[in-house]
Length: 471
Image 1 (tube, rainbow, N blue to C red):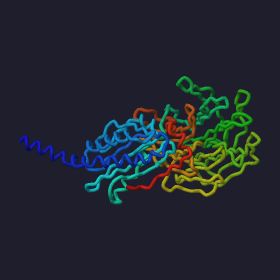
Image 2: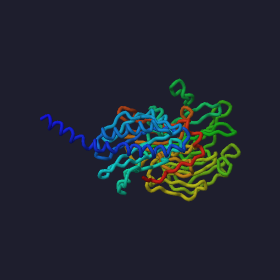
Image 3: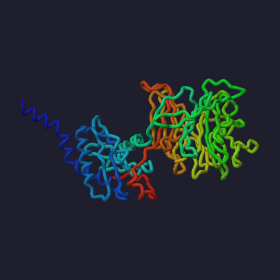
Image 4: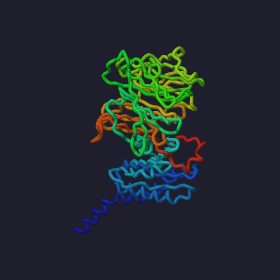
């Protein structure tokens, strides 16, 4: 009986033992391609954040490969290269990693292991946090059938936890229509909350929101009943003082306030909803659209009103044709208008040039709300109800490149707005629906995680690109 027991144990271990004879060459090949990607970088720091085993090998065998690879990389002779071991466990064919290494490393590595007959292949993807893109995709193995290469298409969601992260959350009023965060001329950041009957102005002090002032709003007549009340608020500064505008789908006129000599004064209303203060041909403009009465979409084209004299000039405003839209925002470069981003009535995402022409619709991407940061990011909500997502796009190179994605189970995004929190730019995301025991309406602030500084200086002028997949 003992002999049969020993034979059974040996038979069980034979696949692992046979594979172990070739594990070191595979480890060496994998380490070599990682070193090759890192050797042109200045003091690069890296960590493995994703490791999947798509073979019939056991978790124990895959974890042995990982441990040998980490040991090999930690002892590399590559100058200035450091690797952090972030794995906390491996089971069910997937590794589990803690977040500390992700936030401290400049490069993130994702591994996928596949098997073809007796041959093992490893796909290596390297992600740069500085440029928010894959900088290398490598494959080490002998001949692998083309069909199996598809498994190496590393999803960007592998890197989502190092992209945009929620840094604060707070319960919001169920009738909150919009929020605007701005750094005042005195350097302090104030937050303006728009509700149907008032505008509340807050500052963050001593770990709580402190209300400084409430401005009541009288929308006047005609008042248009709306099933779902929506609105937009805008704050900007010029030589006259601090301007505040508020528009909603319950009134054809937007309310305008001006802060001068220490107090707010109401100004003449506008017959459109201001959305952004932009520069076009070195002239400041108020850009906006008009709500369809009582509806939750804009119509009638983009309204542009000059502000070069410091005050709105209604007799000089003009319109650019645009389709009806649920949401729109602008990206700028060097303080000048760069592009207009829009979600039309069919929920298709569209982008327009600075001349408001050459519309390009993304048939794949269907959203509901969007917001843009001048620092080069665009956030678009998914076209869904009760189980929403947010997509984060990089616009820094003048185009549109999807990088990150975040899910909001059992919740729906009401609106996305650019904002400021704790000195950093990011997005306010207003959510509806309960998340476990959370509030029914919640306001969250999401900002981009910063890459470490030690490897940035030598990479500022280096062009990153995805390399060809090769053996």
